[in-house]
Structures are given as C-alpha cells and as structure tokens.
Amino acid sequence: MTDVNQENGVLSADMIAALMEAGAISGADRSRLQPASLDLTLGSHAYRVRASFLPSHRARVSERLEDGLKMHEIDLGAGAVLERGCVYLVELNERVKLPETIAGAANPKSSTGRIDVFVRLVTDYAAAFDEIPAGYDGPLYAEISPRTFSILARAGSSLNQARFKQGEPALSDAALRALHEKSPLVDGEANIAGGLGVSVCLRNDDKVIGWRARRHAGVIDVDKPGALDADDFFEPIPPQRSGFFILDPDEFYILASKEALVVPPGFAAEMAPINTGLGEFRVHYAGFFDPGFGWSEAGERRSRAVLEVRSHDAPFVLEDGQLVARLLYERMAEIPSRLYGSELKSNYQGQGLKLSKHFR
Image (cartoon, one colour):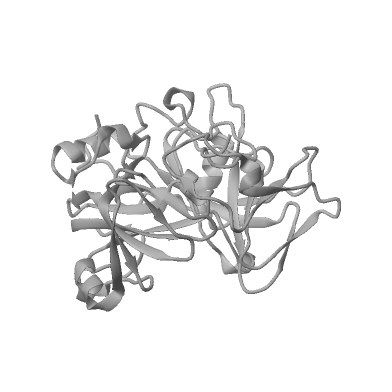
C-alpha cells in the first residue's frame, strides 16, 4: 500500500484503514469503508437544537449546546423519529486525531440527499461546515435537518461520509481537459470551466423525467432499503413538451443529468452544491462520486448524475440541457483496490433517474 505520508491526493479505502490502525481515526468500522471515503455513523444521543450553528474558533460544540441552544436530548439506542422542519445535532461514533498533513471533508450520502435530509459535519472550533482541518484532534458531529420527510434513525445509522486528503489534489481546468482527451468523462464535448459542467434532462422518450416529493408523507426508516412504495412519497413528472419546467419554491425534486458521467479509477469527484450564477436553486446535496463511478474497462458510459433540486425564494424555470452544476475532480493518492461498481454492490452504478435505495 502507498505510504500516506508520501502521496498527495484523496486517500483510498486502504489508506483510510491505515489511519484507523494507527489510531488517527477511532470508533470506525472497516465495513463502512468506500473506495475513497468512510461512512460515518450516529452515536446514541441526539440533541434537538433551536437552530443550526457553528461553534466558531471560540468554543467546542458541547459548550455551545450548553449556551442555551440545546432544547432536549433524544435516545437513539432503540431508534427515534427525527421530525421534518427540525434541527438535530448528533455526536458521531467516529473521532479523529489527524496528522498535520491530512485534512478531511464530508458530504451527505447519496441515499440521504435523495430523501431531502440536510446533513452537515461539525467539529469543535469550526468556522465552516463539512470541513475537518488538518491535524484536528476531537469529536465529530452531524447536524441533521429533515426537510420534506421525517426519518427514523438509530445509533449506528449512517447519513454522511468523510473523505481524507493530503496536499492539493484538485484538478485545474487544463488538467481536466487533458484527462477528458485521454479518458472521456462524458460522451461528446465536455463543458469545462471551473469543473465539468452538468446539465439537466427534461425531455426524453421515458414516461418519467423526474419526481416531486409529496408533502405530509410517512416516516422513512433510513436503515430499511426497498421497504417503501415510491408513489406514497413522490409524484412522477412527465416529459416536458415545452422543453422547460418551473420549479416551485421550497419544493423538492429528483431529476437526472443529460450527460452520462465517468470518474476514472485514479480520480474522485465532488458535485459543487450550489452556484448562484447558475440560478436561485440548490442542486445535489450529496456530492461525492467515487473512483469508478460510471466507468468500465470497455469504455461504456452508463451512469447519470441524479440531481437533488430545491428552488429558493421564487419560481424558477429550468430548460432541457440547462447547466445546473459542476463536477470537480481530484487526484487519488493511489488507485483503490476496489472500485465503485458491481464488486461492491454499489446502489447507483449504471443509474439513470433513480430514487434512493429506500424505495421499491
């Protein structure tokens, strides 16, 4: 295995496992390792809080909870319902003591984003969400805010994931163009400017081009795949003859990219969560794409990005083929021994438009 002290880039599962064995990551289970990330798990206690917050450089999370932000404590040992519209804070089972050369970043898991649960990582003395500073020594917390559906979660449930990286692995636009020329990242011409452009598909031959979440639906157990009927939680959106679709404010939609995307084995990618220059809406809560996503040795492009979309403030028109997000690529410190795909029974390899794994 490559020595994590020498290679710059996003750490592979084997390299994360080495950090676990060295004590730099404690409380983690090797079964939770993905090709380039670690699934984080909820501890046994959740706190209903008055509002989302960051401790900033002045305090630990626990100190801010006692400043009057904590409303009450919830035992997750046997499972508990986290209500939509509320904000919760949960200390995770994992704790880190990172070397000064290694930092981390977090994102909701794909299945979490697709049920409109907003999850962000918080650390002590944090000035930003979803960041683990290089050399950080301390606990990790998940801020959880179900937006459309209430969820049933328990100790050990996994709603977000962390990547660890060394150095500056992000690809410049020039490097991204060179990668696309060598190993095409999309079929046809690539829109590369601040990352790889991703557009939305609103017109095709299928009967459904998207899904709109139903309000006042039932509870989703986050640990039970294939247990629910999609029609009880989402209504289908038919193809748009006009070629455009109007997003209603504060409604949640599942749409798909027009492009089939590829993340080659030596790279990882992340969807930029929002770009106000592209419109007043948020796309893709769950932003990590693992090495091997959409990739095959035969060179086929089979996987589209599923887009979690929410409009803000005013109705917004989306047109077929409109640019909605950008995919940012980073170098891996080493090629993972196992890639995203059939070997790992990955839920979304080869996907088109697809709801989360919770639905039949």
